[in-house]
Image (cartoon, one colour):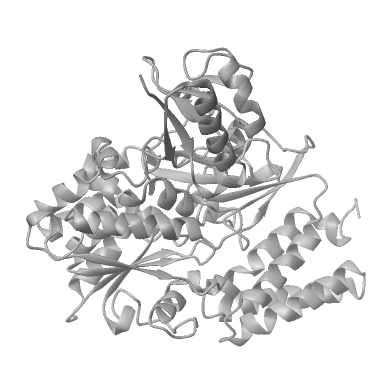
Amino acid sequence: MTARVYIPADTTACALGADEVAAELAAQAAVRGVELSVVRTGSRGAYWLDPLIETDSEQGRHGFGPLTAAEVGSLFDAGFPGPCEHPLARGAVEQIPWLARQQRLTFARAGVVDPLSLDDYRAAGGYRGLENALAMPAQEIIDAVRESGLRGRGGAAFPTGIKWQTVRDAEGDRKYVACNADEGDSGTFADRLLMEADPFQLLEGMAIAGLAVGAERGYIYLRSEYPRALRILTQAIETARTAGYLGPDLCGSARAFDIELRLGAGAYICGEETSMLESLEGKRGLVRFKPPLPAIKGLFQRPTVVNNVLSLAAASTVLALGAEHYRQFGTGRSRGTLTAQLGGNVRRGGLVEVPFGVTLREVVEGWGEGTASGRPVRAIQVGGPLGTYLSASQWDTPLDYEAFAAIEGMLGHGGIVVFDDTVDLAEQARFAMEFCAVESCGKCTPCRVGSVRGMEIIDRIRNNQQREEQLKVLEALCETMVEGSLCAMGGLTPYPVRSALREFPEDFGLGPEA
């Protein structure tokens, strides 16, 4: 009997040696006369365990990891792929506490199915949402999304149902769905993981959005540094089109929706929605003035839904399981689940999907288990490179949009970067300004010039050159950038700077510990 073995093939797992492990498994099986069928899945997001290989059993899948190619032989010596005892055995994968304590809605299939198998996807509940949507009037689709409480997962957290309603109500001879897959925030990888582990879910969510707003064409704007996601999405789009899940006749409904995949321009600013639209149109990625909003005049000046990968994927869950099921997770106005991405100096990094309302401390200590260095955690940055730096007094804040806004923070795309007590927050504040200077599109003065002046001012403060006077200048500069920048690039850059000054003044030579 041929045994099935599952090995992740997403970017991170492969960077950690998954391809070498797969090759050694095949080689060892051939030498030992063991019949193996190797299935390359996406990762479950437990990157501290990758490469994690899994085998079928009567009790579900059993896992071994993190495994290196050099350890594969010892695994066979212990009785693999049958029941065996091995130092890297993890038991039933679904019962590994790190995974079992999560609430996976969007990532329920990640690491479980073959990403390019339509049969796997459908067997695991895929395309149920699209089938339900095809049987509903467009307004009912939008109502379901609105009632679910789904908000944008790209950073702005705008209610998805309201955005879709605006596009549906807008006048236009054509309408579009644009998926922003230009995932550029440091410490974020959820979009990439979903596209590499469960690509049909994104395609399904986009088709549902198209039905809801009356669009017949969608675009995926994919980050240029994601070659593996590019290959997988290209194959998935062609498979879905061949099977009738994309194209002129969706599932025999005589309704059309198709998707075109475009590679990004390699610029962080193209993650901003209007800059992305400019790039999609073949122009330089510059931020547009708003209004008009993209929902009114977006791609090619037509009404356009612009949503993040996770937002569109979540819409497929809403339509498959119902609005009430989805909104039972979360708290307040933050409904559903947050896909927190644990990175930086953390012991157990990876993707953690939990209901909104869990505290930052619970995620970092409960799942991250502290720092990889073993030193105390000193600061945590949430929301990407323009997110605030949070000190220990703020770690009990619930992970929901309003709670974070109350402490001048933001959840953004869900990236959580951990720093131990060796971090210099003045250096990090300078990096925020430097990042803005490098990545600014250059269209507005507060961002283009302000970020360069910001670096210079922070250097003077760190060197104790007219420190008190320069602090006042820095605060005035930050205020100008927040109020005067065209987009969030310049408008958010002061947030990590201000938070570093407020929570860690000693790193700037201020306070009793300076």
